[in-house]
Image (tube, rainbow, N blue to C red; front, top):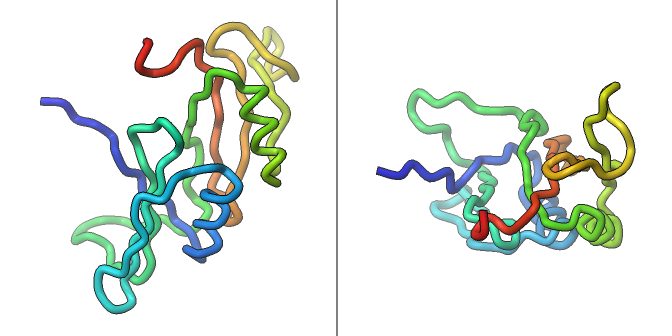
Amino acid sequence: MNWTLEVVTLPVTDVDRAKEFYVDRVGFGVDTDTEIAPGMRVVQLTPPGSRCSVTMLSGMPPSPGAKTMAPGTLHGLQLCVTDIEAARAELVGRGVDVSPVRHMGAGGWEDGKGDTWNSFMTFEDPDGNSWVVQEAPSELSER
């Protein structure tokens, strides 16, 4: 049996503001934006080419026994791209505050691209949830 990671809940304070950021600035697609019951809204977004989505909830009670995260406390979500410099230029062009491209060198983090699998940049959403973008040598379907 496969166990596939398909949805990650993203804790945000304002679903509309977060949706605008992820769709208009980062380029995610909208899978659904629905009110499942009065006052209970689910917005699910997917990065281009990804098999995993993020969902943002408003007015939803937590699942029985589940813990909740405060907005801005999800860190280290990672996206992969095949051209990190083009991806950075796209994000900057859309108004996202993105770190420089960096790699891990002998003395720690250094500016510029590194070898295969060793080029990264980071950004945060309006709540402070943080993302890492890593350059991969090929598309996922080719690995």
